[in-house]
Image (cartoon, protein in one colour):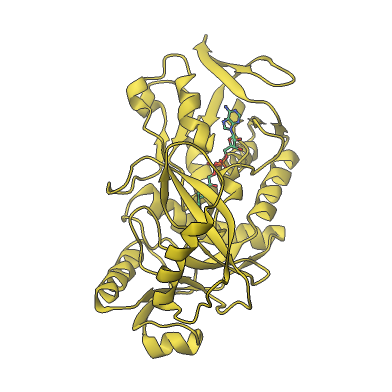
Length: 363
Ligand SMILES: Cc1cc2nc3c(=O)[nH]c(=O)nc-3n(C[C@H](O)[C@H](O)[C@H](O)COP(=O)(O)OP(=O)(O)OC[C@H]3O[C@@H](n4cnc5c(N)ncnc54)[C@H](O)[C@@H]3O)c2cc1C
């Protein structure tokens, strides 16, 4: 089949690679001039173990399986990663209950190696930590997400696929069992495909509205939840990922590390109504308060505004978190079209497993 994948983020690249591996003739259309310039360049680069998500949900299934696939892929393709492990810390009795519930949730999802440890055991691992207990997750880690996306692109090309950059998809319509796709950009024109995958991230809903005949009531709302990061200006205090218990809309302001060992904090949750990528330095005040609960020693003046990302959520403040939404023929009654909505965290972790699922749905 001639397959069009819209968007060269981590999801589009993984889907395109999976389709090319199955022998399809694959083109990725990307509106910007490079790969991974959207949500995929603005995240924590954490390989999630698969703990938090309701058992049986797409997020649970694809993150646990995708995590194993991602580590194997990185090892086989020379992509840098570090299975550094993670501690989800409890600073009072109420949080201890939450951490115990997370252990049960993670085990129900098939996450390996989870262990509840006491405050002293946690401090033996990370000396600066203040907590009364923690959930240790040895399978959690970090990955060079751009190295990973470059490796996906390389494999896609090895199997005959191509990326068309600065090629926004403007309109799609089905005629005589083929998808006709109108592209803008330098080489504007119309090309026919057998199958289309809409993995346009924050642009997925806008693109769905430009698919002729797509049922409007099947396009979910796009809710933007910005996550701000602050870099730590000093010697890193931790060698593992340190997470508080989750908050409404996110996993709580946590310690993330990059592969050079540098430490940063974030992302918080800032509900916004239009895309904006500035980090308000005043948000640091709330960061200090939250971080001091598990790291009382965080020095004043040590947090520097870094970057932010925007989660493409499907539900807003106070509402239950939505699952990934994979809209295929069963959802919209259109053949060989898959639209992906709400692919927020753990999308990076889940990408290889999600990609197989999606490649199965376009046949
Ligand atoms: C703050 C934050 C932290 C996160 N942390 C983690 C984490 O630690 N671990 C984890 O597993 N996941 C994490 N995630 C989730 C992960 O980053 C996303 O799930 C993933 O990057 C989504 O990738 P994507 O390909 O769907 O979207 P994108 O990367 O945004 O790609 C979509 C692409 O489509 C293109 N596009 C849009 N419209 C069109 C059009 N009409 N025509 C052509 N191209 C178009 C865009 O230019 C873009 O390049 C985090 C997300 C956020 C926001």
